[in-house]
Length: 296
Image (cartoon, rainbow, N blue to C red; front, side, top):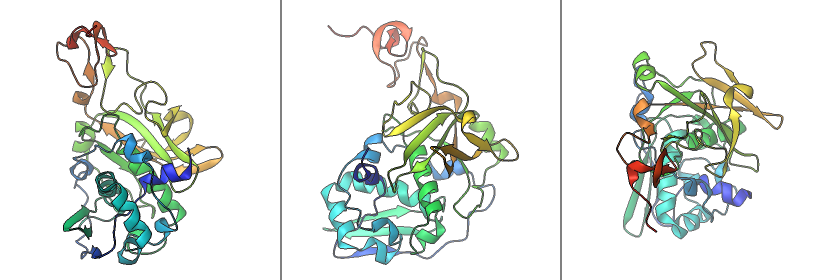
């Protein structure tokens, strides 16, 4: 996939006129503030990762502050597809910018505001050029926030910022989000791509999920490339709770690990037709009698 397509995922929305405002920083997130509280809306689609139209021209290197977001190139990009750009920015800022900060862009009487959350790229968020490590960890975060159907699914994200600070989590979070799902890594800022692996195996034929990118057959969610089991390419932290890094093509990347809730896996045969199940006459999710016979 060409860099222009992949970089459609990195946008900082801004159009000419009012530009972006940077709000004061709130106190850092305290240990015990759970990750899923920041990720209540996890509905970035693969189209959001691959849609065309970003003229890169150094946008990613200008910083996620006023000067970086107020360029005419960024503005032109945002205006071509404002709805998709707005959704992408929501997740980009959530991944990169610390909690308590926002990035705001106004155009044509509409003001867009995006809230920081995980603070994975503090240098970039403060207005400095993005570092290689920040490129990688933000790319992993964006990939982790994709689901095949663009539906809201809560998810626990585990890993470290570009500065090596662990994303806080609690025992309660690990209990609630008890299913180890996937590892995500790569670099959207260049031609290296995005990668996903399954942590605890693929779904069976009667199971399905909005979070299908890691759990179904390989390459369900292009431009994400499925690598198989995370355990063949990635290393755990000292506690075995999450993957710290993954290697692909001789390049080692920081990883983001995801966990989901048991109720986010649907089973064909339970009498309920889930949006991730297809009509049919069997107990397979791809041909599920819960959804009735397919029209001829």
